[in-house]
Image 1 (tube, helix red, strand yellow):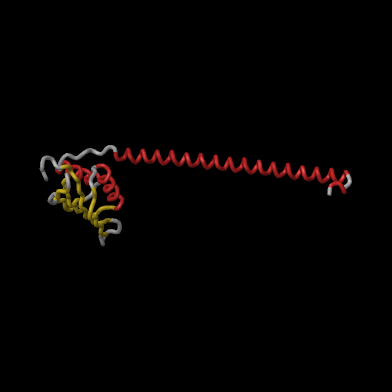
Image 2 (cartoon, one colour):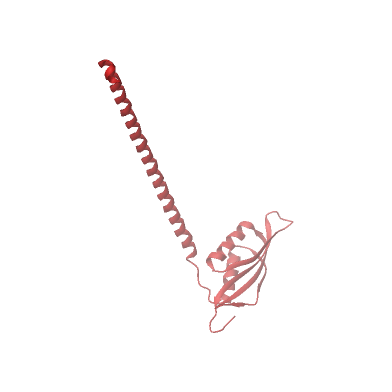
Length: 170
């Protein structure tokens, strides 16, 4: 087909085809470089997210590090009383319940009733109890007072499991 064309037309078709092929190659090169840069940015963002997650994990673990092992129920009761005083919560009632033996551990529950508690203070207290004293909060009941909008009556059982020592359950 090119043989039927005049030299000027052949030259025009070859030059046009060459320009088109060069344009397609340049576009493909540009497209590949752009995709590579997008992937590089995505890798950097992922690495930054991983570093942030590791840093947050370290912070969370460091929050749990200052836990002190409670030796007996009296020390536990003292810690809970101190935490309640630091949180400036009004203790309505704080009562020991009988210990329950489970496996090699004895659960020591303490029933606590509080009055006129702000929700933010309660959450702070619960966080501190769960992470600093190695206790667990059970049977949490929060009732809104009718006279005050943002004050609550709270009752809960705070339980700590202590290892049995020579058959001692209390």
